[in-house]
Length: 248
Image 1 (cartoon, rainbow, N blue to C red):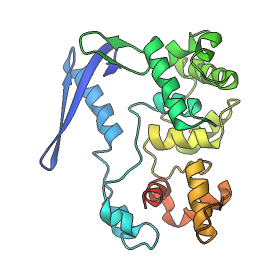
Image 2 (cartoon, one colour; image 1 turned 90 degrees about the vertical axis):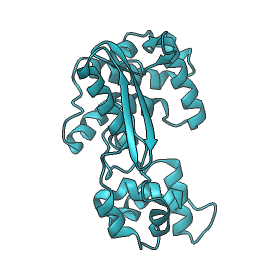
Image 3 (cartoon, rainbow, N blue to C red; image 1 turned 45 degrees about the vertical axis):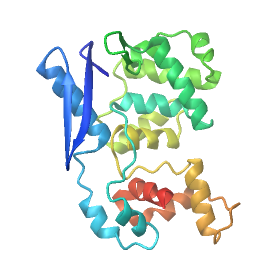
Image 4 (tube, one colour; image 1 turned 30 degrees about the vertical axis):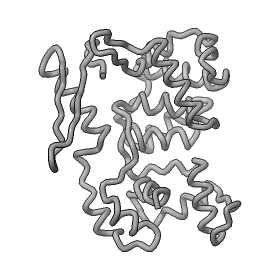
């Protein structure tokens, strides 16, 4: 379920042979088209990955993964705000704990349809309006609560332009205390569909690249700069190449 123009819209997606079928229950055509468009983006069905596949299908590091899963791509969120908010909740904690916090936040203030028994992610305005203590009670650290509310307030007021060029948006996000390069890269990769965005500070990449550079040492650990250098040969496909590397 997605809220569009203040109205709940239910989107359904199914595979029919080689086709992907989208349908929406909405008050009107415009809301249906908007919700379907967001889910088309989230699922990446309109992305043409053929140039990437053709260039790197025989790559010694990720070629096997590409040949096995040419459709693989990083997951996305329907909205950039959702990707940014969830990235903040995932800072410096294990994913399962972060996901539990996200579910609590959705249950607490997320728009809900009783008819469909579905909820959407709370808006930036809703998050900004929560008292800090209320978010802390959901198990989010106080420092990240401050960051989340600060960023939510700016997003709700239109002071974050998610349509800005990638470099400009990254600089804007990192101007907020508590938002670093990793959070900006996650927002670009999962919220904007930028395949060049590489969250190099992610623990999974630090460990996987470190193991590769050390010749297979399970205790190998790379630096963030080493991770960026490692995926430089893939150019504008760095984030997608990194997803294949982890898959392989």
